[in-house]
Length: 262
Image (cartoon, rainbow, N blue to C red; front, side, top):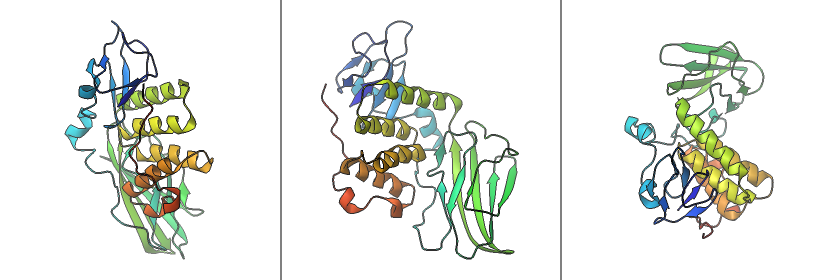
């Protein structure tokens, strides 16, 4: 049901898999980091039965209603339709995210606008269909929501557009994610096992872009399997990009994953 990612627990070693009835008891002065698999949540410094600790996700975000919907766009891909493909999903952890979109046939240039709580920035793109975060734009603020809109122009006429909402995590949430990711990389896990754990970490805060990156890189390297390909397909569906999902023959198994027993 979970994996302990840090040392400092009275009963369990770092990296050990935990069952629902196991007890987490941090040593005095230590904050044990536990990754829950089924609920996809992270807990730090808490003690008690694993089943109870993993029964709820990140409280602050749920109370604010920011995790209610995963999809930033409710449209399916159509040929020639502009669609933002980076970042994927609505939750991000980059202070200066890059943007990319599918090109529109006949367009002469694009315009990217970023609207924050009190400001708006614009950037014209005359070559390609991506934009590295401009140095002239200020970094995003932790915990704030932003809207990104990409317009496709044919000379002076708008011939396509797409808009997505981005929510930047709070600073302490980003630190927690980075700590968990670093801990997983220190464990002696196979690439497939590590990908499962990283997906659980990122999905604890609905970071679909990072989750897709891990799963897609594993697939591209030829180290994935049909189970993880099915999971990758699920993630692409969640961001409204089903056409990017692996083919059916590459993802035949269900997404429920049986982790090794202790």
